[in-house]
Image (cartoon, rainbow, N blue to C red; front, top):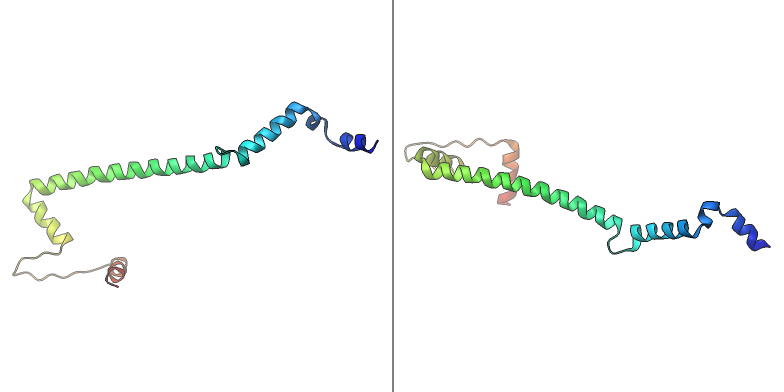
Length: 112
């Protein structure tokens, strides 16, 4: 008789074997399966991040190709690039380098 009292306390919807099987199946898919929903969500998030990275690097490659083409075709651009990036100067020139605080920190980290 006590067995029937316990079963009577369970809601009617959970006594149905199909609903109970569906609930167990959903719990299994969510937590225990090798292709569970949590892992799938993390994989989709990683895929989205990788697509953003791919787009960024594709744009970066294209801009670098343009810069390289400019450097190969025009000597003025090549001289400007050498002066800015490598701090090259002509023999009769003085070179003054003015750094922003963030550039100064970057240089200090690089030197230490």
